[in-house]
Length: 359
Image (cartoon, rainbow, N blue to C red; front, side):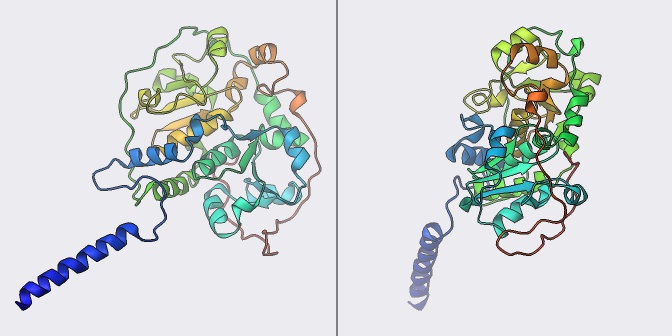
């Protein structure tokens, strides 16, 4: 009798614990991961359920230099400079905070109230590292983060020299005019990150990616052209530009803001081959690369985008737009020197490790 009573009591206790576990205060962050589910699928579902950012009209969150200059001195704007400490100390925008890419998630979680700012703006030398970092932070649910087109190159004359020196026109880069079809669908890559739900998986994956060197997510045009067949090349551009200008050898066009979902063309991307993405100036492709790398794809964005190899075409066909680098993109705003002051604390920011690869 005692044994029967014990068994009944134990079963009731187990039932109560089970109910408490399922209905407790654990934050609901989207799909729950289990031992039988593909972790990448859970992460993908989380992205879709939380705005499907990369496939929305809100992407990429890139400001023009003029737009940034207009708001940069407002109190509810936070500027995060991603360069290394030495570069930052030599000169930076007044009020900017120096944070390295690997430290950005912790900075958001433990040092600022991110939603309290109207905008949080990431800056680097070229604009492409900051676009990549912001692409990841947007995927974590930060709706007020931005990068600046061309980065500090569009804000300070001394940085503009970098873009000036790399724009070019290469006939071999645009000789291919064929409309290459999408490959057959395959499956999502497998990622080894462990988490209880989509948000946890995304957070861990973000920290991992932001700790990597820049050559893991950026690639030089010249490196691609050594052997283009080594890569699956994505032309992340409009159909007119793909057909009129020609494109990199074998490049397949994927529609920006529309194609990178399972019900579109995401699964036509190879999970077992390096992917190279390019757009006009490397900013939108950096956002796409951030998304693909979060999902486990071996993706890289071409530095400087199509400006690197077909600048003349963009200059001729995109007059009046910020798609191509020109003197119209250049400004020369005042800089200050020294360390940054952490928001709310009034203390110097902790010195952190150098930026992965710079920008």
